[in-house]
Length: 170
Image (cartoon, rainbow, N blue to C red; front, top):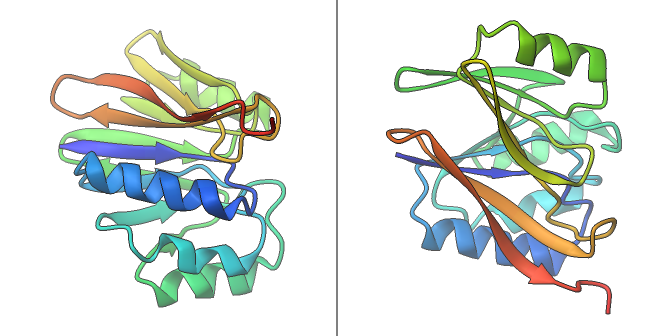
């Protein structure tokens, strides 16, 4: 199965639309969002997503109760600041990542197959011991000027970053 991974959408509606479209094209079985949606009105942009969405809050998410409700209304789930997700045999930790000590502890504990985070807006895929660490970068493109998501193949454990748009702010 393929898992779509995204983070840091920050209310950038056209790029959220593009990310959802691309994830549907990739035929992902589920989507994990590492937070920073920003405002509750963005939830409707995820409705066309064909896969189940599970997310966590980021440090820039406002009106958390309403944000959680709006995502619930479209059949998605925002679990809180951390989620442990099971996909087949994989044990996945999902968090935003602004608490670097917590993030490092989760990665270094080697108790998760995959740790997914955002926050830095920098797309990185790396291995730390037995743990695959994935930061999909930023959908919004505000800091890097590149809108990205990631896709993980759960059978091969290969992850790749997908560029949605380069020079987003030009």
